[in-house]
Image 1 (spheres, rainbow, N blue to C red):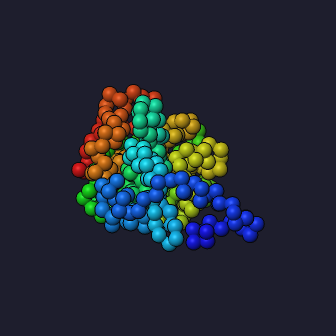
Image 2 (image 1 turned 180 degrees about the vertical axis):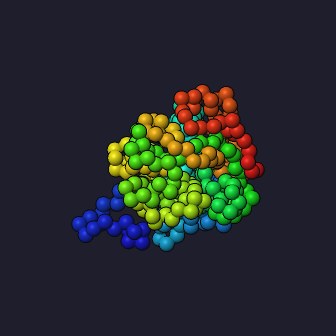
Image 3 (image 1 turned 90 degrees about the vertical axis):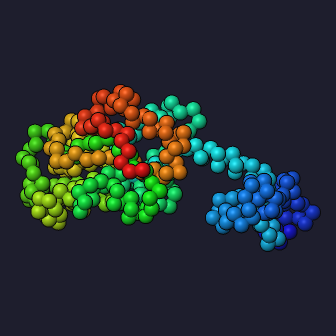
Length: 315
């Protein structure tokens, strides 16, 4: 019994079989050779999946075995996961609306969205912890979006980049603009407080670029080190008076009835591995960015330009 690792205490009588042992004995148990034949892969791949923690298995008497019931369940769950879309990257309200529309319409697929910032989204995609990554990272040297960061974090040509839309970025200020803020240089005035976006977000990188273009030192901006994780949080800070201004997208300013000072129109992209680009569920999601569909979804959202939505940037 000890060899099975099933000892559960001193008080169990020797005549009583362990409940887990009863379950195991009721299963059809396979070795790696049988699993390989069943899955139509070689035995080396079976053991690789075991090492990666992907393939369900048990260790009995120091040997790796595979209950058929667990293998069958894993096949079903893997098929379901194959149809799911995991998106990580930048925070955007219009993208959320489109994902909601997809989840309402799709019969056998669902999109999960983690707004963790553009850089982290690309890192998650590189480790295959996400299937797609949405980003709006401005390259300071090339004066262009996304491509150089795809090369830096993904390091191959096996990715497609699709433009989803453009959106306006600028400063949120309270109604009436009581501090009289007109430029980024005004953020260095002693009576102006600021709240910043999280490090690694595309908005933070864009704000840093605009500060550099204007010759404004970041450390002179009161509140530069104070961070929030979304455009909405930044807008609420200004609305509640916790900060005099913040940098973000026009739509949130409109939503919260804040004044908006536009500074930049940026491209918002999605990065897709080439082996997923042609998958039906991914194509169905991208179809929502076609003019006829996206225009009906974003008709009441200010600050977006959808004239080039769905355009292939790289592929």
